[in-house]
Amino acid sequence: MNWINSVFRPKISSFLNKREVPEKLWIKCPETGEMVFHRDLEANQFVVPSSGVHMRIPVQRRLELLYDDSTFETVATPSVAADPLKFRDERRYSDRLKDARAKTGREDAVMVTRGRIETLDTVVTVQDFNFMGGSLGMAAGEALITGLDLARQEGLPFVLFAASGGARMQEGILSLMQMPRTTAAVMALKEAGLPYIVVLTNPTTGGVTASYAMLGDIHIAEPGALIGFAGPRVIAQTIREKLPEGFQRAEYLLEHGMVDMVVHRHEMRATLARILRLLTHQPDPASLPVPQAEPSVAAGDGAADASVAADGAPADQTA
Image (cartoon, rainbow, N blue to C red; front, top):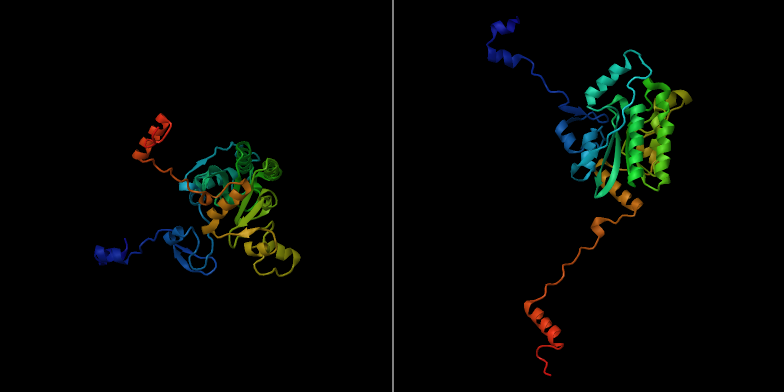
Protein backbone atom coordinates (compact mmCIF):
# COMPACT_ATOMS: atom_id res chain seq x y z
CA MET A 1 0.00 0.00 0.00
CA ASN A 2 1.23 3.47 -0.86
CA TRP A 3 2.06 5.59 2.24
CA ILE A 4 0.07 8.51 0.75
CA ASN A 5 -3.12 6.48 1.04
CA SER A 6 -2.56 5.94 4.77
CA VAL A 7 -1.59 9.55 5.57
CA PHE A 8 -3.84 11.70 3.40
CA ARG A 9 -7.57 11.63 3.13
CA PRO A 10 -9.10 10.10 -0.03
CA LYS A 11 -9.95 13.47 -1.61
CA ILE A 12 -6.41 14.73 -1.15
CA SER A 13 -4.82 11.51 -2.37
CA SER A 14 -6.99 11.51 -5.49
CA PHE A 15 -5.83 15.06 -6.16
CA LEU A 16 -2.20 14.01 -5.85
CA ASN A 17 -2.59 11.00 -8.12
CA LYS A 18 -1.67 11.56 -11.76
CA ARG A 19 -4.71 11.94 -13.97
CA GLU A 20 -4.73 9.98 -17.21
CA VAL A 21 -4.92 12.05 -20.38
CA PRO A 22 -6.64 10.49 -23.40
CA GLU A 23 -4.33 9.57 -26.26
CA LYS A 24 -4.17 11.83 -29.34
CA LEU A 25 -5.94 14.65 -27.52
CA TRP A 26 -3.26 17.01 -28.81
CA ILE A 27 -1.43 16.48 -32.09
CA LYS A 28 1.98 17.96 -32.86
CA CYS A 29 2.57 19.71 -36.17
CA PRO A 30 5.58 17.97 -37.80
CA GLU A 31 7.00 21.23 -39.19
CA THR A 32 6.43 23.89 -36.53
CA GLY A 33 6.09 21.70 -33.44
CA GLU A 34 2.84 23.44 -32.54
CA MET A 35 0.37 21.41 -30.49
CA VAL A 36 -3.10 21.38 -32.09
CA PHE A 37 -6.26 20.25 -30.36
CA HIS A 38 -7.56 17.20 -32.21
CA ARG A 39 -11.08 18.60 -32.63
CA ASP A 40 -9.73 21.76 -34.24
CA LEU A 41 -7.65 19.62 -36.60
CA GLU A 42 -10.62 17.43 -37.53
CA ALA A 43 -12.83 20.47 -38.12
CA ASN A 44 -10.18 21.85 -40.51
CA GLN A 45 -10.02 18.62 -42.56
CA PHE A 46 -6.79 17.56 -40.79
CA VAL A 47 -4.92 20.64 -42.01
CA VAL A 48 -2.96 22.50 -39.30
CA PRO A 49 -4.70 25.92 -39.17
CA SER A 50 -1.58 28.05 -38.54
CA SER A 51 1.00 26.34 -40.78
CA GLY A 52 -1.23 24.76 -43.44
CA VAL A 53 0.52 21.40 -43.06
CA HIS A 54 -1.64 18.60 -44.47
CA MET A 55 -1.76 15.78 -41.93
CA ARG A 56 -2.84 12.27 -42.84
CA ILE A 57 -6.65 12.14 -43.03
CA PRO A 58 -8.70 8.98 -42.35
CA VAL A 59 -10.02 7.29 -45.48
CA GLN A 60 -13.64 7.42 -44.35
CA ARG A 61 -13.44 11.13 -43.59
CA ARG A 62 -11.81 11.90 -46.94
CA LEU A 63 -14.62 10.17 -48.79
CA GLU A 64 -17.31 11.90 -46.73
CA LEU A 65 -15.80 15.29 -47.61
CA LEU A 66 -15.57 14.36 -51.29
CA TYR A 67 -18.98 12.89 -52.11
CA ASP A 68 -22.34 14.67 -52.31
CA ASP A 69 -24.16 14.47 -48.97
CA SER A 70 -21.26 12.28 -47.69
CA THR A 71 -23.03 9.34 -49.34
CA PHE A 72 -21.26 6.63 -51.31
CA GLU A 73 -21.34 2.92 -52.07
CA THR A 74 -18.46 0.62 -51.13
CA VAL A 75 -17.58 -1.77 -53.95
CA ALA A 76 -16.85 -5.37 -53.00
CA THR A 77 -13.41 -6.62 -54.05
CA PRO A 78 -12.17 -10.19 -54.66
CA SER A 79 -10.50 -12.11 -51.86
CA VAL A 80 -6.97 -13.46 -52.33
CA ALA A 81 -4.64 -15.87 -50.54
CA ALA A 82 -3.65 -14.31 -47.23
CA ASP A 83 -0.03 -15.47 -47.01
CA PRO A 84 0.96 -17.43 -50.11
CA LEU A 85 4.72 -17.38 -49.41
CA LYS A 86 4.43 -18.11 -45.67
CA PHE A 87 6.71 -15.13 -45.16
CA ARG A 88 8.33 -14.45 -41.81
CA ASP A 89 10.83 -11.84 -40.65
CA GLU A 90 10.72 -10.69 -37.04
CA ARG A 91 7.06 -11.68 -37.09
CA ARG A 92 4.85 -13.76 -39.33
CA TYR A 93 3.19 -11.91 -42.19
CA SER A 94 -0.19 -13.37 -41.22
CA ASP A 95 0.17 -11.77 -37.77
CA ARG A 96 0.99 -8.41 -39.33
CA LEU A 97 -2.12 -8.67 -41.48
CA LYS A 98 -4.27 -9.40 -38.43
CA ASP A 99 -2.88 -6.37 -36.62
CA ALA A 100 -3.42 -4.09 -39.62
CA ARG A 101 -7.01 -5.31 -40.05
CA ALA A 102 -7.74 -4.78 -36.37
CA LYS A 103 -6.21 -1.29 -36.49
CA THR A 104 -8.02 -0.05 -39.61
CA GLY A 105 -11.12 -2.22 -39.78
CA ARG A 106 -10.32 -3.02 -43.43
CA GLU A 107 -9.32 -6.19 -45.23
CA ASP A 108 -6.46 -4.47 -47.04
CA ALA A 109 -4.97 -1.13 -48.03
CA VAL A 110 -7.28 -0.18 -50.94
CA MET A 111 -10.93 0.88 -50.69
CA VAL A 112 -13.07 1.15 -53.83
CA THR A 113 -16.19 3.33 -53.78
CA ARG A 114 -18.79 4.81 -56.09
CA GLY A 115 -20.85 7.96 -55.66
CA ARG A 116 -21.51 11.47 -56.94
CA ILE A 117 -19.16 14.46 -56.90
CA GLU A 118 -21.28 17.55 -57.58
CA THR A 119 -23.84 15.28 -59.31
CA LEU A 120 -21.18 13.49 -61.43
CA ASP A 121 -21.23 9.71 -60.98
CA THR A 122 -17.63 8.67 -60.25
CA VAL A 123 -15.57 5.71 -59.06
CA VAL A 124 -13.09 6.74 -56.36
CA THR A 125 -10.37 4.50 -54.95
CA VAL A 126 -8.35 5.40 -51.85
CA GLN A 127 -5.18 3.83 -50.48
CA ASP A 128 -5.01 3.67 -46.68
CA PHE A 129 -1.45 4.36 -45.49
CA ASN A 130 -2.38 3.15 -42.02
CA PHE A 131 -2.69 -0.38 -43.44
CA MET A 132 0.92 -1.53 -43.67
CA GLY A 133 2.00 1.74 -45.23
CA GLY A 134 -0.55 1.45 -48.04
CA SER A 135 1.72 -1.15 -49.62
CA LEU A 136 0.74 -2.80 -52.88
CA GLY A 137 0.02 -6.51 -52.56
CA MET A 138 -2.26 -8.99 -54.29
CA ALA A 139 -5.40 -7.82 -52.48
CA ALA A 140 -4.66 -4.15 -53.21
CA GLY A 141 -3.93 -4.95 -56.85
CA GLU A 142 -7.18 -6.88 -57.24
CA ALA A 143 -9.10 -4.00 -55.63
CA LEU A 144 -7.58 -1.45 -57.99
CA ILE A 145 -8.32 -3.59 -61.04
CA THR A 146 -11.90 -4.12 -59.81
CA GLY A 147 -12.41 -0.36 -59.54
CA LEU A 148 -10.85 0.34 -62.94
CA ASP A 149 -12.92 -2.39 -64.62
CA LEU A 150 -16.10 -1.08 -62.98
CA ALA A 151 -15.42 2.44 -64.26
CA ARG A 152 -14.73 1.13 -67.77
CA GLN A 153 -17.83 -1.07 -67.89
CA GLU A 154 -20.12 1.65 -66.52
CA GLY A 155 -18.52 4.45 -68.56
CA LEU A 156 -17.51 6.44 -65.47
CA PRO A 157 -14.45 8.55 -64.63
CA PHE A 158 -11.95 7.10 -62.16
CA VAL A 159 -10.24 9.03 -59.35
CA LEU A 160 -7.36 7.57 -57.31
CA PHE A 161 -6.05 8.94 -54.01
CA ALA A 162 -2.59 7.40 -53.81
CA ALA A 163 -0.70 6.95 -50.54
CA SER A 164 1.84 4.16 -50.38
CA GLY A 165 5.36 3.17 -49.51
CA GLY A 166 5.51 0.86 -52.53
CA ALA A 167 5.26 -2.87 -53.16
CA ARG A 168 4.64 -5.18 -50.19
CA MET A 169 7.87 -7.05 -49.58
CA GLN A 170 6.15 -9.89 -47.69
CA GLU A 171 4.53 -11.00 -50.97
CA GLY A 172 7.69 -10.83 -53.07
CA ILE A 173 7.25 -11.28 -56.82
CA LEU A 174 3.48 -11.65 -56.36
CA SER A 175 3.43 -8.05 -55.20
CA LEU A 176 5.62 -6.82 -58.07
CA MET A 177 3.27 -8.53 -60.54
CA GLN A 178 0.54 -6.08 -59.52
CA MET A 179 2.45 -3.22 -61.15
CA PRO A 180 1.98 -4.43 -64.77
CA ARG A 181 -1.50 -5.79 -63.99
CA THR A 182 -2.78 -2.44 -62.70
CA THR A 183 -1.00 -0.63 -65.53
CA ALA A 184 -2.85 -2.78 -68.08
CA ALA A 185 -6.17 -1.98 -66.38
CA VAL A 186 -5.36 1.75 -66.51
CA MET A 187 -4.55 1.55 -70.21
CA ALA A 188 -7.84 -0.27 -70.88
CA LEU A 189 -9.69 2.57 -69.13
CA LYS A 190 -7.86 5.15 -71.24
CA GLU A 191 -8.57 3.25 -74.46
CA ALA A 192 -12.26 3.50 -73.56
CA GLY A 193 -11.85 7.29 -73.53
CA LEU A 194 -12.60 7.67 -69.81
CA PRO A 195 -10.81 10.09 -67.44
CA TYR A 196 -8.23 8.79 -64.98
CA ILE A 197 -7.36 11.37 -62.31
CA VAL A 198 -4.64 10.74 -59.72
CA VAL A 199 -4.36 12.66 -56.44
CA LEU A 200 -0.90 12.16 -54.94
CA THR A 201 -0.91 12.40 -51.15
CA ASN A 202 1.85 12.13 -48.58
CA PRO A 203 3.69 9.85 -49.18
CA THR A 204 3.50 8.22 -52.61
CA THR A 205 6.69 6.28 -53.29
CA GLY A 206 8.20 3.04 -54.56
CA GLY A 207 6.52 0.72 -57.02
CA VAL A 208 3.23 2.60 -56.81
CA THR A 209 4.94 5.71 -58.21
CA ALA A 210 6.64 3.55 -60.83
CA SER A 211 3.31 2.24 -62.13
CA TYR A 212 -0.33 3.35 -61.92
CA ALA A 213 0.15 6.44 -59.73
CA MET A 214 2.00 8.32 -62.50
CA LEU A 215 -0.23 7.31 -65.42
CA GLY A 216 -3.07 9.76 -64.82
CA ASP A 217 -4.53 12.14 -67.36
CA ILE A 218 -4.21 14.78 -64.65
CA HIS A 219 -1.90 14.58 -61.64
CA ILE A 220 -2.92 16.56 -58.57
CA ALA A 221 -0.77 16.71 -55.43
CA GLU A 222 -1.62 17.80 -51.92
CA PRO A 223 0.69 20.50 -50.50
CA GLY A 224 3.92 19.15 -49.08
CA ALA A 225 3.35 15.58 -50.27
CA LEU A 226 6.47 13.42 -50.68
CA ILE A 227 6.40 11.88 -54.16
CA GLY A 228 9.11 9.76 -55.75
CA PHE A 229 10.50 6.29 -56.33
CA ALA A 230 13.40 6.12 -53.87
CA GLY A 231 13.43 8.31 -50.79
CA PRO A 232 15.59 11.45 -50.60
CA ARG A 233 17.95 9.93 -48.01
CA VAL A 234 18.67 6.94 -50.27
CA ILE A 235 19.28 9.21 -53.26
CA ALA A 236 21.58 11.53 -51.30
CA GLN A 237 23.65 8.60 -50.01
CA THR A 238 23.84 7.06 -53.49
CA ILE A 239 24.94 10.13 -55.45
CA ARG A 240 26.84 11.60 -52.47
CA GLU A 241 25.48 15.06 -53.07
CA LYS A 242 23.28 17.42 -51.12
CA LEU A 243 19.77 17.50 -52.55
CA PRO A 244 17.97 20.77 -53.38
CA GLU A 245 15.61 22.30 -50.83
CA GLY A 246 12.17 20.70 -50.98
CA PHE A 247 13.40 17.87 -53.22
CA GLN A 248 10.60 15.38 -54.10
CA ARG A 249 7.96 17.54 -52.45
CA ALA A 250 4.78 18.49 -54.32
CA GLU A 251 5.79 22.12 -54.90
CA TYR A 252 9.24 21.14 -56.21
CA LEU A 253 7.69 18.61 -58.61
CA LEU A 254 5.18 21.20 -59.82
CA GLU A 255 8.02 23.57 -60.72
CA HIS A 256 9.74 20.77 -62.66
CA GLY A 257 6.65 19.55 -64.51
CA MET A 258 6.10 16.25 -62.72
CA VAL A 259 2.61 17.16 -61.46
CA ASP A 260 -0.05 19.34 -63.03
CA MET A 261 -1.25 21.19 -59.95
CA VAL A 262 -0.96 21.40 -56.18
CA VAL A 263 -4.38 21.75 -54.59
CA HIS A 264 -5.27 22.54 -50.98
CA ARG A 265 -7.48 19.94 -49.36
CA HIS A 266 -10.25 22.49 -48.84
CA GLU A 267 -10.40 23.02 -52.62
CA MET A 268 -10.03 19.38 -53.66
CA ARG A 269 -13.71 18.54 -54.14
CA ALA A 270 -14.45 21.63 -56.27
CA THR A 271 -11.26 21.13 -58.31
CA LEU A 272 -12.01 17.48 -59.05
CA ALA A 273 -15.59 18.30 -60.02
CA ARG A 274 -14.42 21.02 -62.42
CA ILE A 275 -11.84 18.73 -64.06
CA LEU A 276 -14.31 15.87 -64.38
CA ARG A 277 -16.88 18.15 -66.03
CA LEU A 278 -14.28 19.33 -68.53
CA LEU A 279 -13.09 15.83 -69.40
CA THR A 280 -16.60 14.36 -69.64
CA HIS A 281 -18.05 17.41 -71.43
CA GLN A 282 -20.65 17.94 -68.74
CA PRO A 283 -22.01 21.46 -68.13
CA ASP A 284 -21.60 23.22 -64.81
CA PRO A 285 -24.96 23.02 -62.99
CA ALA A 286 -24.52 26.64 -61.86
CA SER A 287 -24.26 27.82 -65.50
CA LEU A 288 -27.44 26.13 -66.68
CA PRO A 289 -30.38 28.52 -67.31
CA VAL A 290 -33.12 28.45 -64.73
CA PRO A 291 -36.38 27.25 -66.36
CA GLN A 292 -39.02 29.98 -66.44
CA ALA A 293 -42.54 29.19 -65.33
CA GLU A 294 -45.18 29.66 -68.06
CA PRO A 295 -47.48 32.66 -67.43
CA SER A 296 -50.87 31.66 -66.13
CA VAL A 297 -53.90 32.47 -68.32
CA ALA A 298 -56.47 34.77 -66.72
CA ALA A 299 -60.03 33.55 -66.45
CA GLY A 300 -61.39 36.37 -68.62
CA ASP A 301 -58.86 35.75 -71.38
CA GLY A 302 -59.73 32.09 -71.31
CA ALA A 303 -63.41 32.86 -71.82
CA ALA A 304 -62.63 35.17 -74.72
CA ASP A 305 -60.43 32.53 -76.35
CA ALA A 306 -63.22 30.00 -75.97
CA SER A 307 -65.64 32.41 -77.66
CA VAL A 308 -63.24 32.91 -80.56
CA ALA A 309 -62.79 29.18 -80.96
CA ALA A 310 -66.56 28.62 -80.99
CA ASP A 311 -67.67 31.47 -83.29
CA GLY A 312 -64.55 31.93 -85.37
CA ALA A 313 -64.43 35.62 -84.34
CA PRO A 314 -63.97 37.65 -81.18
CA ALA A 315 -66.98 37.90 -78.90
CA ASP A 316 -67.52 41.67 -79.53
CA GLN A 317 -67.28 41.37 -83.36
CA THR A 318 -70.61 41.64 -85.26
CA ALA A 319 -71.53 39.51 -88.24
